[in-house]
Length: 46
Image (cartoon, rainbow, N blue to C red):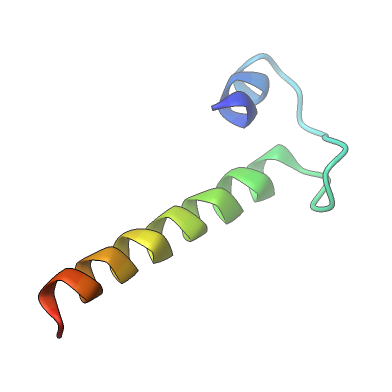
């Protein structure tokens, strides 16, 4: 993931809307978690 590599390289600001790589990583993680929950929900039907 590019944002993780840039964060580890020392970049803390980005050109994206959120402006902070930590916020962008949290946002992407939240989307991934929501997608995983939707997949589990659709497979189990609960």
